[in-house]
Image (cartoon, rainbow, N blue to C red; front, side):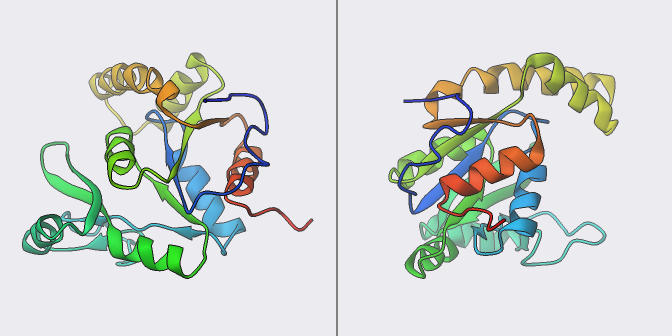
Length: 199
């Protein structure tokens, strides 16, 4: 059952894999980066993609950059937990083997993916725990998207329409974390994974 209360789920037994998803501009990447910086014991999945690296991106850190043929082979041999074509061009997905190796090593595993990917993982890895990262309210989400200044007005409109649909999927998730403050949301997510600050 989904629970939006502060600290919800913090005392639950950690699942082998935790999936984090939520609407556009909610701050999934920011929270994931904070997890990587503050909780190195948490294993954060690196997505595979067929797009070329952008300046400053490191293979195996930001993404695993693969050819179209290699991505096709991963899909055809059932080595992807989830995958999708993004913006009608490049493919992105979560390789299965590194996730299984991290679970076998006893590390808490976090997948940060989009809603469609989370739905695929629910089919391929039903034992995972699904966490919805939500904004405090709609106006905050709009402010964050506009404040990024990275989209045209048309793109913002399209993303906000998408965000409304994504917000409607909250009930599909096991737990909701409200991203009102990144450090608090990050600590709550880490606690769900069985990891706590020592201070």
